[in-house]
Length: 102
Image (tube, rainbow, N blue to C red; front, side, top):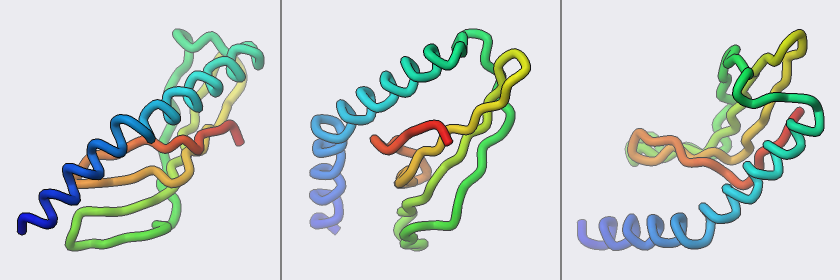
């Protein structure tokens, strides 16, 4: 009961102040890399998203760690972006600092 609420609050704080800034840095680096590849982000079209095999799953808790592969297209090219260790917690996906083109 109360321990779970405490742990959840502690995780939220850790995520907000330690992990989220790293995610933003990684995402900004991905944006810059895309621009170097000639991608104009405002012109990108979403193609699909695929989940990989769960890395860790705790079904009853609504907790899952997985990889997420997003396919986009720009002009005549298709690009895949892999987010490793994406976190599903209480029905909401959380980003990971491990994001890159594949």
